Length: 105
Length: 478
Image (cartoon, rainbow over all chains, first blue to last red; front, side, top):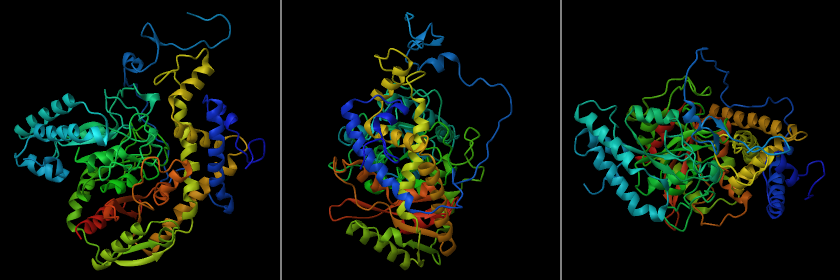
């Protein structure tokens, strides 16, 4: 099995970045091998000819459902913020710096 | 009464309604049993005793006033840790949600409460329901009550083990590729995967939205029907929940008979290489039992069975990678203390918060959805899903219901399946059902020479739960 660059190859470092997962070099190396085996397994679908077959997204066909356009209050702010990792004045969710430069306090 | 913990839901209801026991006594008996056996079994991540007993007292008051919410008012039900119970933690057995507290009740919890059932603890699971042994829980290893050296199955291993160990009479679980049926088979209890859309997914933490379905794990088929009667039906908060009438299943069992029923035996399931002899023998005995009960056996074929695992792992992981994108360390859940900017916040929080199997699946899903691979993997798998669905439609032209094994072998030992692909293959008989959207049930059918339980699976067309229950019930009473 190849380890990156080719047409059907799995590049663990690239996919980890796309998936927003920071992994140690050791973890990446282990995953590279495991994922190649898994991708190799699911590749068996290439044996099947599916020309003219419609894709199934949901086994039971469903249409989108719209509720009436009426304002409702489900939760107050304090409840919704109760699970936030960090807040400012119990009103805002606090995040690390977005733009480069001097950090805010 | 010393053996309250052995009772089924129906038997509990009988004693409660006959005023022979109170809900407080019943709940105390189960709490005591948890204290006795759970240090070994470890089925529960948490159990809020005070909350359970307060609910039991409320229930007893209602019954004393002659106004129980239903015949089942006051009966405890274990809840898998991916179903939201207001003001209780809901962690999906993951570090990333370790301290998350649900801010509302899931649709199924609202329905349970409406009938007076009491949510009873959070049961352990594979992290985000990804796994077949409960070994992927970030917090503890649940043991199989029939042999503590073996896994209880997964992902709903906590729910199955809790019921099998008499820690609770019934539990809710979720099934995306076999996560109710496989642990039920491993622990020797009954596990139902309802038709997709039968049961609201509102408040269920999403793994693969087009496959996930909540269902009960119980000691008897009747209890399974009682629980679906309770939790099934339309929920305006879930746009995939069906409007079809749902209920009366337990009542309908009274007419259960399999005389003249055509039971299909899909040959691909029986010809699988590597299936254990004891599972094969048990399935054969189940076939003979149904014959003796008057059913007609028909050989059928589900020709794309071989591809169901590959199809499942593409569809499920693609949906999971999208669903789990919400865990970004911003609004809730774990946030890495070391992040210096926004990208690091995502990368580190997710890298530190998710376990290895969850990372594998997010990566596979990301890969099959990524530019250049989408058509070859995801779109292709969706087309194969159509073929698998058609297999079932064609089979049901020749028979009413399908009978198969649930798993190729009985419960394995801890650490035995360290290769992720080998672990995936233990779901070989269960994933097609989720891809097809139909309903199925795993029922105890026998034991292997080591005394480990073996289950058989019945699979019925969409919305044919009554047929499923009737057939399972007839087998149970054999």
